[in-house]
Amino acid sequence: MLMQSKRFSGQVAVITGAANGIGRACALRFAQEAANVACLDLAKAQNEVTAAECQDFGIDVLALDCDVTDRNSVESVIRTVLDRWGRIDTLVASAGIYTGDPLPDVSLKQWQRVIDINLTGVFLSNQAVAPTLMAQRSGSLVNISSMAGKTSWPGSAEYSASKSGVIGLTRSVAMELAPYGVTANAVCPGNTLTDMVRNVAGQVGSRDGLSAEAWLEMRANDCPMKRLAEPWEIAGVVAFLASEDSRYITGQAIEVDGGLVMS
Image (cartoon, rainbow, N blue to C red; front, side, top):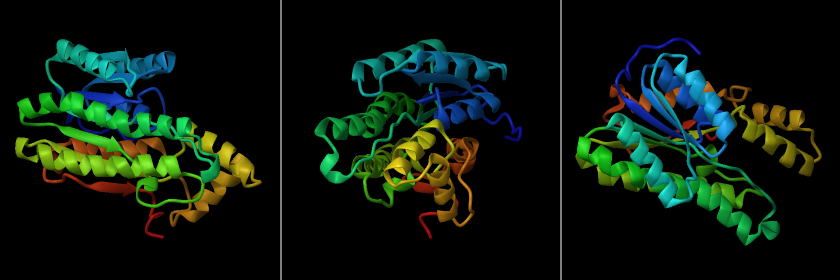
């Protein structure tokens, strides 16, 4: 990751799912660019590691336990952030999980868990932060969707539905908050080298008779760029959407997938 400017100096970024993957990369990117960062996750030990790495950039950091499916939990951590800094400039709603099974095998409990975390969690996070951004008449919401929000494949009904829902939610939020000067956009990553995708490779690969490594190689070859994304590449787009350079971009679902959906 190349060093960037300090364009978020004095600002506050709240990141859900900050313990791992894209959320972690986003937390580090905002810290690198001088934002104070609130790292939200239920994986306490890993979240504290992310926070410590953010603090190495010389900014103020909070590591907070947060269950994005619980309204009280979300609202409580947002109050803590406001008590600490008195403002929020960016929310990155990155907390998410993946499950995927053939349609007849998807239990209602499995469906509901994915929807609760991937979609309801984004809704509750957006809802909790929106009043502050509206009062400030500035700020950005960046919701992490997926290429699965724009296209689908067999054995991923619950995941694809949740990520499509994030795009629809984001558009509605963007319409509602635009008069306040607040932007809301979704980022739709392709396959990205995170622990979640490596776990998916093991799960889906075995179902398809492939090793995890062979499945990842196959996914890379599906992409015109013939490789998978690195988390920092997604974080760079998120940071752009939170910056002054993107003040006239809202309601978009931006693919960061190496051309996969196009192909």
